[in-house]
Image 1: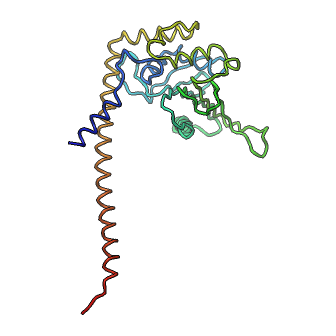
Image 2: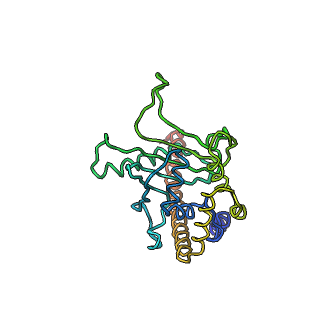
Length: 272
C-alpha cells in the first residue's frame, strides 16, 4: 500500500501542463514552433550573429505524431546550405550541461560519418542550449565556448565545433543585441506574461506560431499521446528500478550475511 501511495505522490509532484498551458520554453512547444523553417532560421541568425541562409529542419530523429507537421522532435536539428549542423535545446532544469553538449556534438559527427564521409570534410557543428537559469553563474545572456591551447593561448583549435549557452537570467543588456534580450525574456515568461508585447518583431512571430499551434487539434492530440508515452516509460522505469533494487538488495544482503556468518564461525573454537 505504501508503494502505491509513493507513486501517487510522485505523480502529483510531476503533474504535467495541459496543452493550452504550454509556452515556448516547454520542449514540445519549442520544437513545434521551430518546425517552421523561417522561425528556426531567424533564431540561428540571431544567436550566431551572422545570416544563416537556407535552413532545412531534419526529421531523421523525429517521432511522428502528426503527418501534417512531419513529426515532433525532442530537439531541434537543422542544416544550412553549407551543410553546417545545428542542434538547439531548451533546458529548464538547472543541471550541468557540459557533458551533454559533448554528447550532442558526437551525435552530429556520427550522423555524418555514418554516411561514409571523411573526417576532413566534416562541416561546422553548433550545439546551442537555451537555459531558463544561469549555467555559468556570472549573469551573462550568452556564453560562447571554443578550444584554446593552454601553452599557446592565442591558438584556437579550429575543429569546427561550437558550443553556446544562452541564459534567461543575464543582466548584461548592453553587451548583446536587443533582439536576443527580448527573445530570452520571452522564453523566461510564464503563461500570462508570454502574451505581453515584447516590442520585437521576431517575438511577435513566435507568439503567432504558438497561437496557431494551440488551435490545432492534431497537435494537441500529439502532445497528449507524447505525455502518455512518457508516463508509461516513467512507470516502467520505476517498476524496473524497484525490481532491480530489490534484487540487488537481496544479493548484497545474502553476501553480507555469509561474510558475517563466516566471521562469527571463525571465532568459535571447535571442540571434539
